[in-house]
Amino acid sequence: MTPGQKPSPDPQPPTPAREASLKHLALLVHDIRTARRFYEIYFGFDEGSEWQGDVLFIRNSDGFDLALMRGEHPPNPGAFHHFGFQVASADEVKALQHRLDAEGVPIIEVVHERDLVSFKCVDPDGYTVEVYSELSGA
Image (tube, rainbow, N blue to C red; front, side, top):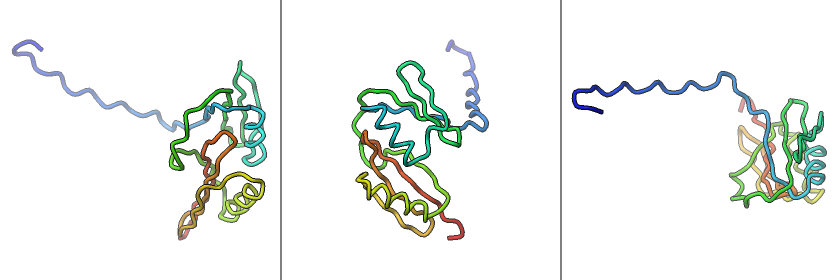
């Protein structure tokens, strides 16, 4: 700035994209077939699948894609670092938790609160996955 020059006004803050929605999540996995099977069996993916180069995109009925690529992912820093699937009821949460537990999938956290029922499990590649239902009227 030169002497006598007025500072420029603060720029306007950026405007967020209207109605932006998260539509895919990319995961590095050890074995694409194993990861695909896990998300198909337990979470309803594979409404459509498509290879794009070395990446397999699998889709659920909501149009959300998981992009699976073979590789090494960073170590999981703990249960807080996760992604989640919302289901319609506490009974669905509990049923899926029991199924996963019975089939040897590690369950690492269970929450039964007044307004939330959830659990976190570990997928075949070590990612933490939450399943939850928010309880209304609590």
